[in-house]
Amino acid sequence: MNVLVVMFILPLLIIIASILGYVWLKQWTIVPLLTFILFTTLTFTLFNDSFFVWVIIYTVISLITSLIMCKVRTLSA
Image (cartoon, rainbow, N blue to C red; front, side):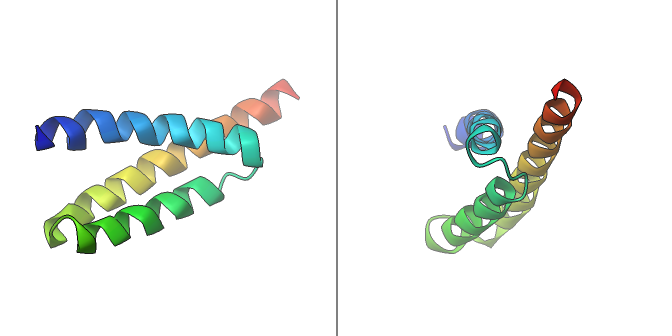
């Protein structure tokens, strides 16, 4: 169950949150920063230190999604 959550559900939620966060806030840096802060906190409270690798991966996914949304918005404007 944990593998399913870590590898499929959380990345999907990160992508959705990044898209909605960029549309709502119009800033591509906010959601990746919040993703990093939230999952770093969860690493030390709920998970173990090895989860920090996933924190980096989720932050990169959020950053890429936010930059894609920024580029799409720039091209459509």
